Image (tube, rainbow, N blue to C red; front, side, top):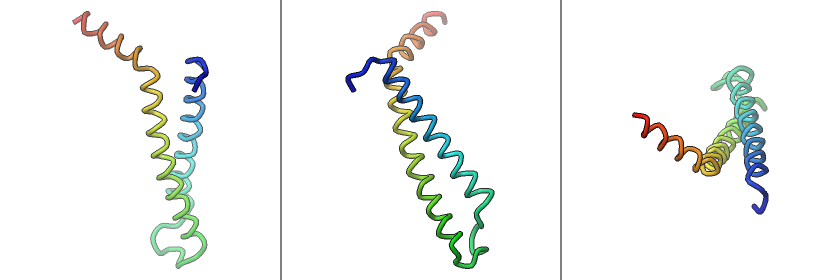
Length: 89
C-alpha cells in the first residue's frame, strides 16, 4: 500500500464496517429467519442455512484480520497513550 496513512485508515475502516455489517446480517438471518435443526426436513432452507453459516464464519475470520490491521496502523497512538497513562500513575 503506497497510499497515505489517512487513506489506508479510511479503507480499513470501510472494509471493517462492511464485514461487520455482513456478520450482523448473516447472524440475524441464521438466528431469526432460517429453521434450526431438522425443522425444514431437508429442504432448501437447510442448505441456505449452511451457506449463511459458512459466509458468517469466513467473514468473522476476515473481520479479525482487518481489526488486527487496524490496530497495527494505530499502534504508535496506542503505545503513546499507554506510556502517557503510565506516567500519570
